[in-house]
Length: 472
Image (tube, rainbow, N blue to C red):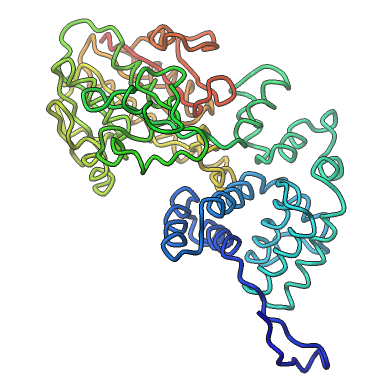
């Protein structure tokens, strides 16, 4: 649609109203929410997509493109920032954040999709005209035309230092991770260049949606009857959805009989549930239960044995999510809002205890790519005391002969082995069990006795698990 009114600054030239592209407008809105409100894309995007569908603005292909634009831009933000920096005449921090979001969306279309260059530039300039105004749209146009002069490989050669000169910075730019995260993951993984490159590449791939059939309430056979469903790799309760599968459309998920749960999280719960015990097996505790995925699986497994699960979560609103996840559990359970570092139960009350402690989340960067840009090395110092207190309290809460599972969704050594070693050294009374045999069929579990899962090796989040038997 055009407007024949004329702007004084362009005598004789008709002014054309910018065209609103609903897909790119939505992608921009999602990126602004991530930037301005520290929101997570996986929480912001679904309601925006539903609203667009309800208004009739979107079909399935539009939703897929909007999702790719948002997640692709966030995953590749570090690489794209380096490219944009090479094409502007000022430090990147001096570029207004909304302008940078439009530029990043444009760069992703140019370097990370099959959208033709002219279309990527044109669509981005139109978006800039709508959300930024004509003046800054000219800046966007100039920058993107520079970017369009080369492809991604060409730009990486220009903006990334050679591997031989600075391996960590090279990998940081090429694979779009902060340098400190590259270093930490490399330390945790060990080995040479091939392994870390495979891990960083896996972090930038879109993860599959994995479901869990909660025992006694749903079966994998039921879930496999759904379109685009295939068996899980390792967990007997896991079913994977091929690209485009929508969990909310599945009856068992809507009814809470099944849920969305990464296979790594399922394996952690299963390993704790199957660890050999000395003595009774009647009371289980999930000491950091929110938002409830592991608690729901543990509760169902406990019910099969006639055991009771107590699910504890410090934050009342998250305790509410746990209660929702456990609703309909086939056996008895209890949900309480309590601080796991100050137990609301007597010492030695439980036979099995799980503490999936708060952490940096570096093991779930596939699902929350923006987290890699928010976390800082100093965050480790903030989590460290809490992680140790929770593990100590868990060891106090389990009876002698019982088992504690310490889990994190981070492979950082400062959040995994270092915590376990420190607590066992200082507190005593616990011995590490070999967790590897409790993950049957899962390959490449390392030297043990603890277990570190990896996206590039196992197709899961980078979950860590140490199993500790209390001996005193």
